[in-house]
Structures are given as C-alpha cells and as structure tokens.
Length: 526
Image (cartoon, rainbow, N blue to C red; front, side, top):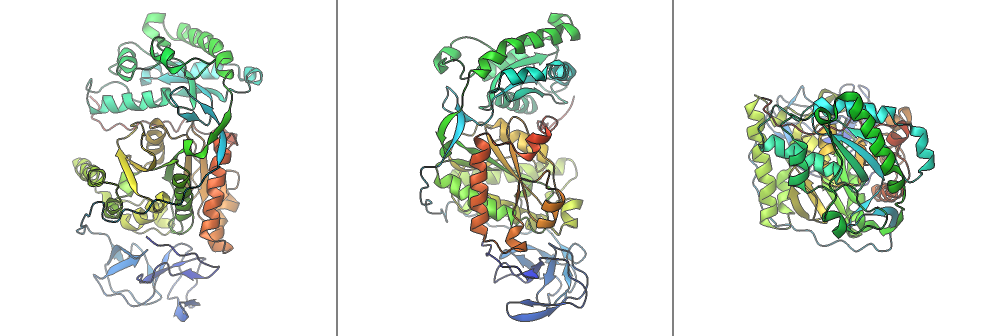
C-alpha cells in the first residue's frame, strides 16, 4: 500500500489509482483546490481527514483509496462532492488469497543501536521493573487494589530501580468451563503478565473457590517467583521456588490477606531494586502496534510513519507486532501475499474465518466497524480503516501469527489475533511479551497499559496541540509542515529506544495504565 510523501497542501491524492482525495484542512463550499495540476471545486463543506471525489463516480462503482477498494458508491457521486457514509456502502466482496507470493526482500541491516534495559535470565529484556499484584478472579480484585493503595509509595524513594507496585485486576475468573477456551485464554494472559520481562516479581491473589484456580495457573504455566534477581540463574529458578500464592479463604479473609500481601511486597522491594539496567541491542525491543480513536489522517501520517519505524526495528533485528484482527478485516489478502510461508498466511485466514463465525453468533458483522468517532474523523468503511491500520506494520515479511496473549517467539513482523477494542487488544500484546507499545490516535486516546510504556502518536497537529499533555509525538507535521514521512518514522524509532531505556511517556507521567488491564473473555459466562 504505497503512501506518498506530501507537502503542505489543501488535499492529498494518495495513489494514482484513487478516485478520491483527502482534505488536509476544513474545506468550504465553493473553494477551489488544486489536485495533480488541475482545479477541483468543492461542492460542500468537507472536514479535515474526509474524502472528496476527484471525478464523477457512478452508483455501484468502487471507491478507491491507497490504490485499493474501500467501498462502493451507494448513489451517483459528482466531482468535488464529499464522500462518506451517506453515499458509500461496504458490502462483502470476494477476496482472493495468495500465499507467500510477494515476500519482501530483507531490509538493509541497522547496527549499533542500543538502549538501557533489564536483562532477565531467560534472555528477554525488560524496559521497566515492576512488582505486580495479580488477581486470578474478580472476587480477589478489591484485595489486590487495597494492597497497592495501602502500600507506602514513599518507600520507593529508597528503591530507585523499582518502577512501582502494580495491581492487575479484572472482572472474570469464574463462571467458565474449566480447561475450556475462555479459561485457557485467561490463564495464558495472566501468566503472560506474571512472566513479563517488565515484571521483576509478583504475588498471586485468589479467593479460593474460583474456576480459574491459582494452583492450575502456576502448574500449567510453570510460573516462578522472581526473574533475574541478585545474580540467580534461570536454571535455579526453574528448579524450585513457586510464586507467592495468597488465598483469601485460607488466610482468613480480606484484612489478613492485605496484611500478608504488604508483608510480601516489603520482602521483595530490596531484591527487585537489586536489578540494574545494562546496555542491550535494539533487537531486544518487542514493539506492540495499536491504534485507537482513528481518523482520516491515521493511514496517511501516524500509521505509515510507524510503519517506517517498524521496518527500522526489524532491520535492527527486533520484533514488531500488529494486532486487531477485526480491524485488519478486508485487507488480510495483502498480508497473506507477504507471509513468510503458506502456513503463516493460512493461520491468518483461519483467524479471519473464526472472527466471521464469532461475530455472527451475536448477530454482528465485522463490516459494521468503524466506530462513531472514527466516522466523525473521516473513516467511512472497515476496508478503509483496515488499510490505514495495516500501515503500522511497515513492509517486511509476515513471519508468524499467534493467538491472543500467546508468547511471541519469532523476530521480525508478527501478527497477534486480538479484538479491535484498545484495552483488550493491548492487554493481549503485553501478555505476549511486548515491552514497548506505540499507539496512534487521531481523535485523541488517553491510553496506557502498565507494565509496558505506551507511546502515543498524534495523526494531526491540531489534536496534538490541543492534547499535548497526553501525546508523545506529532506525526501530523507530515501534513501541517511537510516533514517527510521517513523523517517522522525515524523520530518514532529513536523515541522507542529512548522510552525502552527509561524515558517516561505521557501516560506514565499521568499514572495511566492500571485500569486498561482487560483480558479478552470470549464467553460464555455460566
């Protein structure tokens, strides 16, 4: 999906095959703009990020953006007319899948880039150093939050290498089939956070009678207490100590569990503080890619710029992970072509078919996306949204497709099956091992997901300036100032390494990231 570098203009024509252009600013009725050397008269008000017809489009004819079909005209559209939900439909259309037919060449290697990270015994690298309090069930959530709230945060001044005490609570954990898909997915997610390279140590808290039992979690996922502390080897850890498991019914209730939890944290603080950052290569970054509150500029500025950064990370030997299957819908055929093998591409299509069946169970359709805010920002159909979202992953070969929260083991470009809802999607990415997240937004999402830092990238300058306390980088300068796409992509790559090395993101400065822990429940609740 080629996206051209642009200079400051009134509208952008992204691809020679496109029959629409995109407004760079608000356009008024009667204005004349220049597109490809010819004048176009604007037929009515068009907001920034929305589309304008370049020529007359017959009813039923395809609407093309990025050189791809994003929908079909539901009525005749005249040149200069606003193109949006009132005159575009998004019916299902046949997509042919080719597998591993357009595998991109390997990028030119990038060497010598490093950051300061926490090397763990299993070889992975953390970008943060948290103690986590993990509830396996909603029934123990309050106790986990009480422990974190009653912990004296002033003590952290004595332990500068500890990023904080993090409660991770959720609304599930019971009313499910033991060993069923929902249980195993929750198990995988909880274990992914406990075993995350950004978590140095943790305690597990349960009620005692729930389906998602703590002994099953610990044994089935082979969890150990502390990772990479005081020079201990991975072998010694695997050989013995299991993590602290606090069961409220065994300890005698709420207050006694809180007291015991605070005691355990007191023991862990000096040990966790003993871990120091060290110089590690950029290849140790596992970058989660997400977008939320997208607009018509997302696929033009922030997402393709993040794609440039993704390609740079892959060239440096690192890993970049695209997610949000329901927002890849309609352009998955472009990813299957660049899959490393046929089997990788087939796994992606299998996930798409699963989603079609899953949505149909509830009377929903994947093409009902985008959201109200997305449409207000200029996105008309799921196909348009998906094409723009896919740009985050850059141009390298697709090396693997993994389940929600599954450990990411392949390097390079990987796809994780997640919903499009931001907290649920990023929770899966973090559970899989992402140690940094880049989050693009056009409407202005205020997002974080501890223990992983989230870099928020604005798609347009007006929103960046309005919400500068929440945004980390303005990719809107590609349009507002004519800054080349490649330059902004490099800025993102540099910022990823700075944040991986300890620089605080805006969401971290606000303390955002605990409420966004949201494991995906696929049901049913029994």
